[in-house]
Image (cartoon, rainbow, N blue to C red):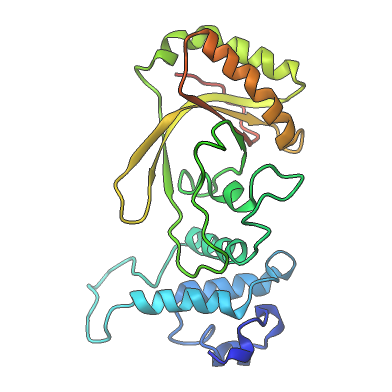
Length: 261
């Protein structure tokens, strides 16, 4: 790529320039084309995406593409150059955040980085929630790429039910106490659940995390500081019931389902 284009924004370039750069037109990886089209269609939120970011994605797809003399099976529905739209959205978000030093650090009034906020629950659904706070923030750091890292595999998580643990035996007792504590702190909850998350990092086997008391609060009704301040009381309730090694995590959601172990 012409070095003069590296820091130029996609939204500032003409279609002809984007074709010349290999970001639009024929023989362009669908994921790259989809990313550029989405940026051009949403300049307010995606206007900071640069040619360097898209070129990193383009290089990755070029590296994954099969040799030209290798025929793909007829009827193949997927290929390395045909990511799903959700994967494209993740690439856009990763490109933005990984090149923004502020997004990789904790910036007030946030208590966690925007990077962790957006990718902590990566993989649990097509549109995972954003993390507000978690009680093991200091003891269990989230892997964050150095600024400008081109290739970094975000851990992919899966949510699992909780069965046969000490918490199951006392949940009917502690759950009402937790809800009362949440209300006492003036928080408006929308869900209280227990869950275990497994995670797969690049080239590693699946690992399971601790039991999580997973709490959703209604969107735009509180902030990270308030849920952080409410967390110690919940941990005390669990400790009084002889429940330890449990993590409390908070997120925003409008769900109304209330469930337990």
